[in-house]
Image (cartoon, rainbow, N blue to C red; front, side, top):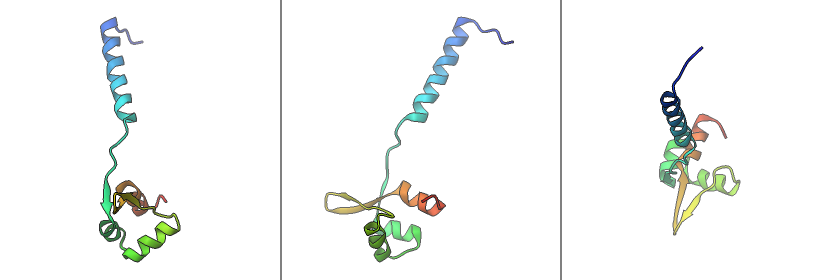
Length: 81
C-alpha cells in the first residue's frame, strides 16, 4: 500500500498530464524533395511519379514544388506500407 499526501498526488498528476500532452502533441512534418526521396528509397524519379499515380506514395505540392513526407518515406523503408 502506498500512502501519498495531497502535494505528492498533485505532482504525480502534473507529471502524468505533461507526459500525455507531449505524447499526443502533433509532430511537425518534414518534407523532402523528390531526389531525396528517390535516393532514400533506392528508386528512380520515374518510379516516384508512377507510385504517385498509383497512390502508393503520394507527392505533396507546395507552391510549384513537389515534396514527399519524410514520415511516408520512412514507413516505406521499414516496410509498413
